[in-house]
Structures are given as structure tokens and as C-alpha cells.
Amino acid sequence: MSLQRLLHKLRPTQTRSFAPISTNSPPQPVNYVSPYQIFDRNAKRLQKDRAAIRDAGARNRTVDYVREEVAERMMERFMDIKRKFDTIVDLGSGPGHFSKLLETGKVKKSIMIDSSCRLLNRDPDSEFEGELGFEVERIVGDEENLLTIVDRNSQEAVLSCLNLHWVNDLPGILVQIQEALQPDGLFLAAMFGGETLFELRTSLQLAEVEREGGVSPHVSPMTDTRDISNLLGRAGFTLLTVDTDDVRVAYPSMWELMEDLQDMGEANAVIGRRNLIQRDTLSAASAIYKELYGESNSIPATFQIIYMIGWKPAPSQPKPLDRGTGKVNLKDVL
Amino acid sequence: MSAQAATTQRTRPIQRLALHSTVTCSAQATVYGKCILATYTDVKKDICKEEFAAFKDCIQKAVSIIPLCITYNSTPTLDEEALMAD
Image (cartoon, rainbow over all chains, first blue to last red; front, side, top):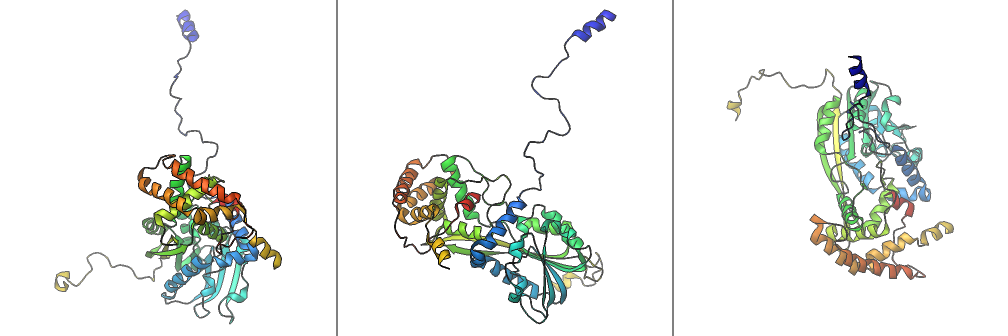
């Protein structure tokens, strides 16, 4: 008996030579980032800072055309809301493309929040609408942590013009905005989504595949329109309005487009991006862009904008009636 | 002001690449682009190798001649560093 036990001990323990022993959590790779970590926020802040001071801001002002256009279209939506505000938060304002269009009769004060200090302070206060007491407050802070900047249930309205596309945790920021709003508070935003820069994305991909035999991220992943309404609903907003709009810009060639993106501070900031594009790939992409999408002597670039409006729930808001409370028979109407 | 003007007039290598790949060698670029266009649903590495070789050859020849003055008005002034980031 004891001998048998001894033999059993001497026998080598059985090992599995192919499959490793299963553990509940697989080991994390070295460069592990959480699933919500897509963009390099620090690189983005540096890109914006650099863009704002290049040629003393002249280059950055030249490429304001997309943001100014979108700010105007967003202002149309804002003016449709028949309400006056004392204070609004302009989240990720940049130099204040949207806040500049505000009128004193509608809004008395704008709190501009942006992570890039230099971009935030690019333009002087005198450029803002209405010297008759329109106030501008600038706060340098991370847009991703809104609740560390403003209190819960404190804001009448949060607006954001073309900034949320660099936020890693979009569901999280929407929840934060909802928390920061007072009951019946307004959230209105415009962000790049869906098909934005699809021409540049496909041209670079084709060029990389043909020249180097693989692809790497050069254009950010973008949010889909359908996702936005789901996310707004999930964050607890009511009375949602979501619509999209395309802004198409013509450039002489891909090189001007890339230069302008860089001057806007919108260069690539995806985590794990290659920090080098070979010259061959660039010139190949330029030829492909021209041939695939080019018009007679220009190339188009599409910016797709998603506009979203949501309200924080409040008892005073109109609500749908309960089921079965209808008094009129639809048969009579139709 | 004059210093600034001087810096914007200086032609960076990337500027010359941009100019030659779109203007000087536009014929070769079109040939290469058409080749990709014909196969773009199934692109493989080096599928348009010869067309690209001609395109690259033209660019290299053009780049090696450094002109005294570039007369292409909308010459982009790309930062090489930033292009790498793109």
C-alpha cells in the first residue's frame, strides 16, 4: 500500500503539452489599452496646441472654414429652441467658433471648456458677439471629465461643436453631460461621424495595400448615426432629435487636404498609429485619390456631421399619453 | 514679416514631392491610378508595380532637379513631421 503510494508520487505528473491551463482572465498583452481607449488624448492636445501657434495662429484661422460652417448650421438649430439662457457650457469649444455666434438676447454667458490652452485663448474677447455684457469664461480642462469641472445638476445647457469625435468614452461623456444638466436642461451637439473623410481613408488604405501589403489606421473610426440615438437614449436623454448633414470641400489635391487637417489640429491621434508614412505610399495615395474621386481639377473631401439634441427629463416636459387613453377613433380620422 | 515670408517661400522636400506627384508627373499618376481603379476590389501588394515604378521614376527625376523658383502658387507647405503623424 505504502509502496504503491510512493510509486504514484514518483510518477511524473501529467502535463498538457498543447493547450495551456485555462485561466479565467487571459494575460493582458504588453500594450494593453481598455476597449474604450481609442485616441491618444495627449497627442491630440499637443497637435491642437501646435496648430494654434503655427505662424502665430494665422494658419489655424485659415482653416476655420469647416468649423465656421458647422457652427452656423448648429446655431440655426439652437435658434429654433425658443428659450433664453443665462449660462451655457461650450464643451470643447476651441477658440469659440460657436460661442462667437451667440447673441446677448439669447445667452448671457458662455463657459468655454477645452483641453488645449492655446487653442482656447487664440482669439481675444473682443471677437465675441455683443459687447453689451456678453460674458466669456475660459476653462482649460479635459472634456472627458466634465463632472470634475462643473457640478451635477448645475447647467442650463451644454453645447458642443465638433469636439466629441476625439472623446474616447462617448457613452460615458453623454452620461456626464446628462448628469451636469439641470432638469429640463438642453444638450445640443455636432460631431463628425460616419462617412467623414472616407475618400482619404480608402485612398490611403489602397495605397498601403498595393505598396506595402497591409493597412494601418490613418483616419479615426467614426460614430454611426444610428448609434448616436441609441447612446443618447441610454444616457437618459428624452425628446431626441438626431440628423446628419454633409459638408463637401474641394481641394486641389490630397496634399492640401492633409496640410489643412494638420493646421486644424485634426491630424491622426489613434492609439497605435504608425508615425511614418513612406513617401511612395503618399504619392501612390495621391494618385489613387485623384483617379478614384477626383473631379476635373480638384478632389472632394466629405465631412459628415451628426447633429444631436436631447433634453434631461423633467416633470414639466410633454410626455406621451398612456396607452388606451385615446378618445378619437383613428378609423374616423383616416 | 520678411523672415516669415522667407520661411514660407522655402521649398521643403515634401513640397517638392507634392508638386511633382500631382503636377509634373500627372500622366504617370493617372496611369497608376487607373490601374488601381481597375482592380480596387481585389488589390494585392505590387499589383500595379510597373505603373508605380514609372510614376516613381518620374518623381525621382523631377525631385533631383532643384528649381530656383517654384511658380506653382498653391504649393502646400506640409510639415514632414506632421505628415508622418497623418
